[in-house]
Amino acid sequence: MSDHHQREIDPVTGYDTTGHEWNGIKELNTPFPRIAIWALLITVVYAVIAWILLPAWPLGRDYTRGLLGLNQGDMAVAGYRDISDWRGEWLAKMETGDFEVLRADADLMATAMPAAERLFADNCAACHGETGQGGPGFPVLSDAHWLWGADPEAIAETIRFGINSGHPDARIAEMPAFDWMSREERAAVARYVSGLPEGRDGAGVAADLFAENCASCHGDGGEGGLEIGAPSLRDAAVIYGQDSRTVQETLRGGRAGTMPAWTDRLSEAEIRLLTLYVAGLAEAGGEGAE
Amino acid sequence: MLKLHYNLEKVSMGLVVGIIVAASIGGIVEIAPLFSINETVELPDDLRPHTPLELAGREIYIREGCYACHSQMVRSLADELDRYGPYSLAAESAYDRPMLWGSKRTGPDLARLGGKYSDDWHVAHLIDPRSVVPASIMPSYPWLMRPLEIGLLRDELATLARLGVPYDEAMIEGAANDALAQSRPDSDGAEAVIERYGETVAIRSFDGDPSKLTEMDAVVAYLQSLGTLTNAPYELLAEGAE
Image (cartoon, rainbow over all chains, first blue to last red; front, side, top):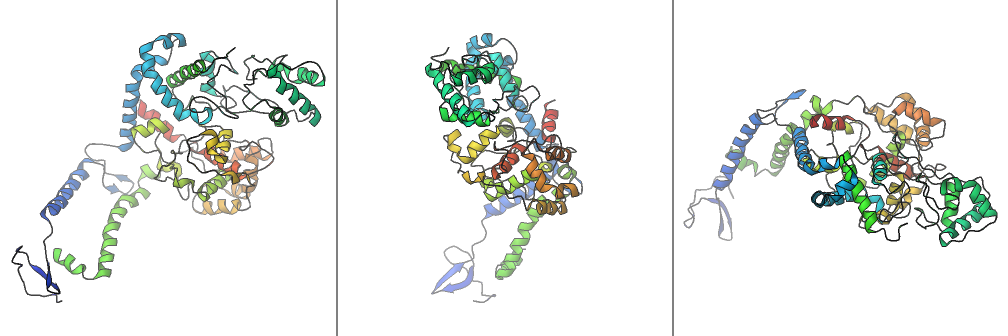
């Protein structure tokens, strides 16, 4: 193999050979395809045009903006505005007005509910479950039990500012720890409370302890319904569970779950849309409601 | 030119050097100016560095490889803004060494996660993701309930300070105490943490047990801080809205 081989034209293709030969087979020196060369040239031309039209050259602390004045951040915000405006055509209706009137608007609901479903999946389902079924420590939304009231305005308020969320307007709910009680007393109260859903109450030390310590929030008979975040203890819908063991744990350590505030993350219209959706979940799954 | 290439192809090491030089040009002209252009290096006035506890959580986040599935960068695309919130600014991760933008999303982006879910949810979700999100494919991290090692935090803050993160002497010396105090709202040190790192720092027992400082405390503190270090991206989005 030598660098300076004799030019030798291949009779079939008309191309030069490289001069390499293996067992009588010679390698052709096929030229680079035209189309690739043209493509390369076109990209170079495009690059020059793009330098002029688009932000391109760095100049120390600044850069050339380009004749079109495009900016990816602004474009994204503009695109986001377009999405919002398009949605706003119907979403704006959600912003104010009576919930009952909104719910009665079938056309609006046909557009709004699929959107609400996505909003719920993205923001609420992580804790409350995809269908609002809740879980240990996270409230069920698909039943008729509401700690702060079933009124849509009350639900919207909870979504807006949360519970124990740290927001200045947040709802505050805390089950205090009864760690000053003796273990036996806690066990007795726990047994008493775990029997309430089945209607077992009656007199005794536990009933006295309950009346003194628990009734102010949970109601005299534990029936709740005061809409201050304290659950009814008669319907077995307590978030954390109402078996004797769990109640003992609750008594020992207290409970203060957090619902985040959404007012900075979602618009008022979105919050009210979710309110209707959540109220709907409760109605759909709310058989056996009080 | 073609002749030069023809000859270069015959010297393989020369070709390797040529390829490296050619490929570097693309990188240099695209990346190097970002270190000097004002738009990319100017820091918002309200940007705060991570607290020692959040920093410990960040280290655990890196240790567990969370970044392999979760990005921390909302891209400047309309649908990303719609789902996650304002797009990420370079300045937001100015104090992150290394930054954890990532590029692959098996899970969702976490850049705007802070405050979205409750601490209880994070704890339940990290211990067993399926317990709260049945369809999740995220691994479980039950061992995060073990005690947090805070002995190295002082050195870590000192190292970051040398790299330009604005930790002062008091922050460095108080690193271990601050980490402990951030998880104990009733402790004497809690005030000091607010004083040093600002009002936006969350002071609470993140794992629900104030008596023990666990890795869970650190990770949840870190996750709850994501997107809350500065208000600049939110202001930018609000301005764009007008």
